[in-house]
Amino acid sequence: MPVWPAAFAISLLVASLARAADAPKVSEARLEVQQSIKVEYHQLRAHLDHAIVQHGNAAHLAQAARTARDLIKAHYDRSIQFVFPPLGLLPALAEGHVTPDMKAAVVMGERVKAEHDQLFEENTRITSALNELMAAAKDQHHQELIAFASHAALRSLHEIEVLQPTTILIGEYVNISLPGTK
Image (cartoon, rainbow, N blue to C red; front, top):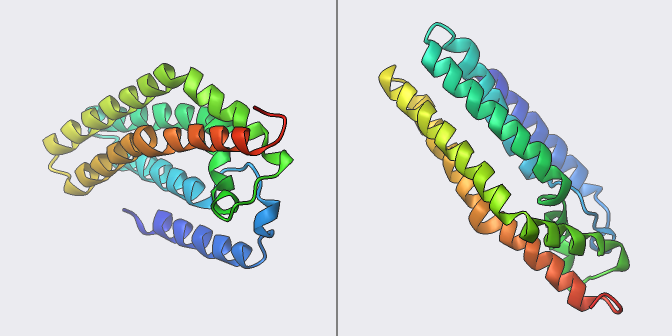
């Protein structure tokens, strides 16, 4: 990975840790995308952008990176609307705090459940694009890009296996914990 994306990620991490020291109390938790998810997305995007520029002369490799980047961007843009925000409630929920302002998590969890097949299809297309990128990287003997694409595919699987079900559970937990939402 080039130095500048790593430096960018480190600066985001430092800024995030600094904000964490001044973060709202747990009872003031909000439905928002957690910093770790934002940083991971920006790292994926930076790495793919770098691969596109660096391997522009290897048309198949650059196109595979472009396709993966575009699919990941579209999916991330949708996921920040309803998949990721409820995850920001986890620290408060783990401490037993459920407040009426968390009610939107119920709707978001229901949306994840309702759009399960579409989310799964998006993640499947992303994984296929990353497999294409791995194949193109193998043709060019680019081990770092092979490792990156493999990690990114694992991240897509993590979303299907962990993040989406967690969002559903958060919605259900908030629903049964708040009076009048059952």
